[in-house]
Amino acid sequence: MSVAKRVSEEMETDLGDKVGYAIRFEDVTGPNTIIKYMTDGVLLRETLKDADLDKYRVIVMDEAHERSLNTDVLFGILKKVVARRRDFKLIITSATLNADKFSKFFGGVPIFHIPGRTFPVNIMFSKTPCEDYVEAAVKQAMTIHITSGPGDILIFMTGQEEIEATCYALAERMEQLISSSTKTVPKLEILPIYSQLPADLQAKIFQKAEEGARKCIVATNIAETSLTVDGIFYVIDTGYGKMKVDNPRMGMDALQVFPVSRATADQRAGRAGRTGPGTCYRLFTESAYQNEILPNPVPEIQRTNLGNVVLLLKSLRVENLLDFDFMDPPPQENILNSMYQLWVLGALNNVGGLTEIGWKMVEFPLDPTLAKMLLMGEQLGCLDEVLTIVSMLSVPSVFFRPKDRAEESDAAREKFFVPESDHLTLLNVYLQWKSNQYRGDWCNDHFLHVKGLRKAREVRSQLLDILKTLKIPLTSCHMEWDVVRKAICSAYFHNSARLKGVGEYVNCRNGMPCHLHPSSALYGLGYTPDYVVYHELVLTTKEYMQCVTAVDPQWLAEMGPMFFSVKETDTSLLDHKKRQKEEKTAMEEEMEKLRQEQAEAARIEKEKEWEKRAKQQQQVAMPGLKKGATYLRPRKMGL
Image (cartoon, rainbow, N blue to C red):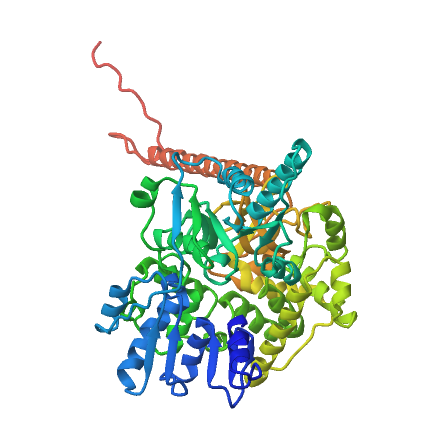
């Protein structure tokens, strides 16, 4: 977006006229557009309607070394487009690309090396392995600020928590230094940068520092390629970053901290040499750089869930996914797991083909789970409400929690809580914002990101257009929350958990412990629902469920019959034991009755046998005796 704006200014044209851009849920182009900037995901979706991409003569793919999921799939598709179209040109660019591998994949195409206008960077390695890289980065930044010449500092951290901790520690050290020093200490402007930061605070990193002051920017890997800040002469590289990795135990992708690759480390170091000779301080040893870390990042296609990719390739009539021309084929197990998850959602049939609901899911630029929720909202008559929830889940969290006003922001958040559902809480936030005429000042007063809410509104509008194209009418349940919760359950039944003990849940499928996050509307309710479904798991000190909704167990059996079934259940463990005892007593009584009946039958049989024998004895004939006569012993003769 920023690049398109810059180029349109250089070409002296309005943005959206000759130069435009397209990102997910936003298209700023027109009939006169000749240069179009877009994400790889947008281009990939365009191949659904135009397999040969006939409206483009040249496609330039930048930052190819990042090997995102969509980029890798595009390589396979564009390879066929190049073979079919003689008038089509494909240019792949990157600062740290393994050019030979790409050239070989595309049939030995030529390689062009274009030297960049960069300055030399002095690399300084740590002498020993670093135990606490946050503390080490703070110490190094303070050393640079006190002892080194002019120039701004850029520190790479893995995420928001570490960035805030680093900024807090730097501010604390500066206060201690100013209070203990007799000399004037130069000012250090500490500036965080991460995706959840409000736009006005993000913009501060591009502003020039005050006279005699130095900027210290603490950033995620967004500053590796996406942002270029002038005046950076010192880079502190912690050697770590976050990557999305498929976690089979959790059954979903999770962001985990990993050591960066050599290519990424080189990219970070290069940030110190944009405006003059610089220095990069690496908080890891040279031996680790040479022997331990990977030369390039693991392609996303080999480490993440492939649900979206499988759905897309199936819609492109790719029957055998294992035969698709991937540059680095994903593990077969990943493909099969993704197909299984799509089958569970009803997107694939038993032979791996797209179902009717699967074809509809392809039309939405959403995660398959959210697309399923949207379509179930139509069936249950609550599409209007579900559409808003899906839109809110498609943007980063709209809740803003500044460290210095945490209690105040938490109190503001609690006002929006809908008991038993974080999803309905998001719906409530949007409806309250709507009733306040979508005002930005209202968002600021309630610690909400106005930028995130505006994006959710745009997403909702785009999804509504797709629904109209599919001729799906917009229905509402008029605040019948149970209907909405059932629609939510239909998409997340595979992410369900049941209560075990006090405040602890276990996943219904694999028994993995999971906990309610303290920011959840269900946390501290006074009672804990027996069954819940959740949007995702976040791994910190515990496995926390994020965006949780309480559900009826009957819904789980109805929506996920492959995992759940209905059977008679007791209301408590005591009732269960009581019923077991009653069943045992009844069985013992039945056995005793049967034993007595068998004994009585045996006695009667025995009596009958005796009677029969008695009759037989009466019928025995004696020698010389007439029937009925008395037997007389003969006298002894002659004695």
